[in-house]
Image (cartoon, rainbow, N blue to C red; front, top):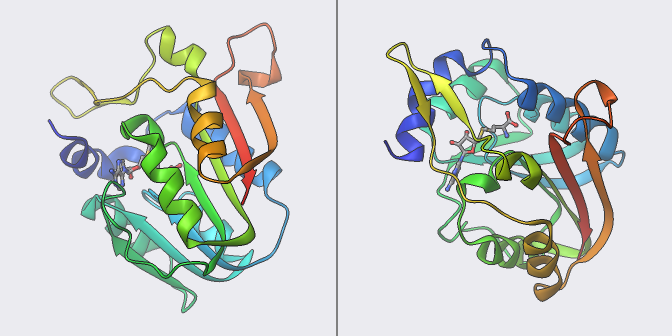
Length: 206
Ligand SMILES: C[S@@+](CC[C@H](N)C(=O)[O-])C[C@H]1O[C@@H](n2cnc3c(N)ncnc32)[C@H](O)[C@@H]1O
């Protein structure tokens, strides 16, 4: 099943099912981003877990995702003149003006994207100088041990197509596209550092 189809079928239960990764990331973004932004682009907004919160922190927001069912869920929840939802495959041109955005935010999406460099290039293109790029993903240690996005569609567990990205894949793609690393953090279940970290987050600046 393609990733897009999988998320279309996951959309109905995504918010309700037990999902430690989703819930930890909700905390990570809130602890990481403390600014107020004129213009924000959210990559892979899904059902809008972070969209409403980001809207409180900006004047305008473009929330993109290629799954129409995930987008529909987000749209059902969020009513604001400040947001526009856009069905968009992140692997192709985003159709946004250059140097126009203050923050690009990306939560739990890049494990589905093979070409990290292309995403960093697109983010760099639309960000203003000093603009920020927030990324939070399943930690590669978790990926090495076999964790990946999966859900029960009623007929059994569906595992989604994922790509392993090492920490240096992110930092090298960032450097190549003119970003400097502002913050790198690892996040653990129950803040317990005896566990393998569940998430890694990066804050880059153009
Ligand atoms: C695990 S969900 C995360 C959703 C949301 N950011 C969150 O943290 O709850 C991953 C999202 O990325 C989207 N996605 C994956 N690959 C994509 C691509 N190539 N283009 C656009 N969206 C994509 C999926 O449709 C899905 O909504």
